[in-house]
Image (cartoon, rainbow, N blue to C red; front, side, top):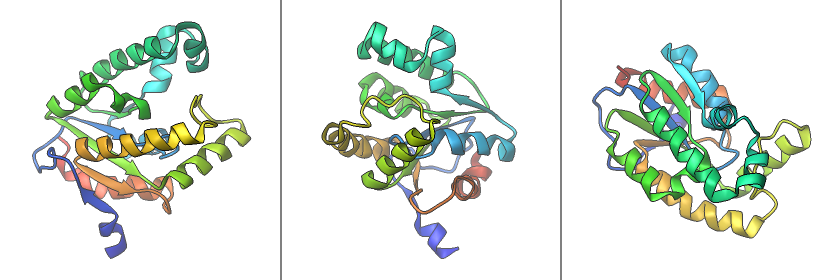
Length: 195
């Protein structure tokens, strides 16, 4: 249990004990946001919203096709609209796309959404990339445009990691944990705070 407690760290200015009405999972690609997000609703009785799936459903196209036909900036706009939709819903757990934290507008909205618990799923870059490659080889990976641009991905990881830390109430180290173990740690830490 002591190891589990050391893996949870209070980070950003939003770390507090008052109740929340929604949760946002953040982290770099491969951190397990969607997988963990699917497990948490069973513990909370809330809904789960995967922004990747929501964007694709709303736009009627896959993320890969949206990137190709509309470009990255148009895709990021769709992403911001989906994130605003998610932050307007109560009793919802949202898996935020890793790149969403890049936009200043998204950072502002996360910081100003006082009844949103932001949880950062953290792991070393090499582990996250290996997870993504394993998923890709298995044929069950979402579209990840940076996966094979390692230098660019590493630079973005470094920048985003600081932003994830700054905007999260706490971080969970996920490198050596199953998704079930991560969900259990989040539930133990946040369960009493959820309204």
